Length: 172
Image (cartoon, rainbow, N blue to C red):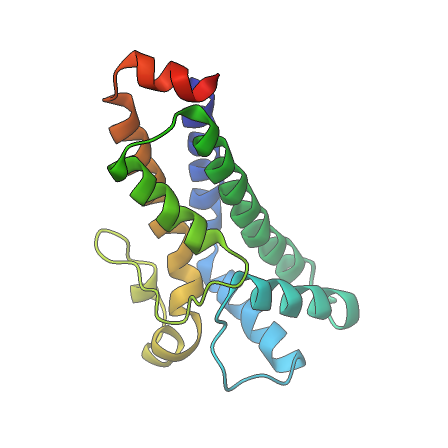
């Protein structure tokens, strides 16, 4: 459990750095969408984001800042997915912890539709976007990481309340 908590703390630190650069991230996504000639649809999934980012970086990206921030987002998503897998191995779960884990796995799924996802208070990531950006294009993608981090913290909090036998059973 301590390794999982440490991994979550590490991801949170990366996210704090990423969050400080949200305007840069949104600008880089905008460049991806312009070069993909897809300015109408919102970025609706991690897979769509990854494909647009990959295409942009392979064919158009001359901006190292865009490259760095886009890779940072994709790396954080990959780490969150791995941590979900690690959580599954820690214990058999309860209905509550399984619910948190299922939500996490759904959110980090490459094809999950993020377009209607919005982080709520205390997260203000969507508030930093213009109305058009938040409503129509990037609200879901900027909300993804804080929502998953919250679910993972809840999973850990509930898992720590379980009897030691339940935790040991899942690890064997």
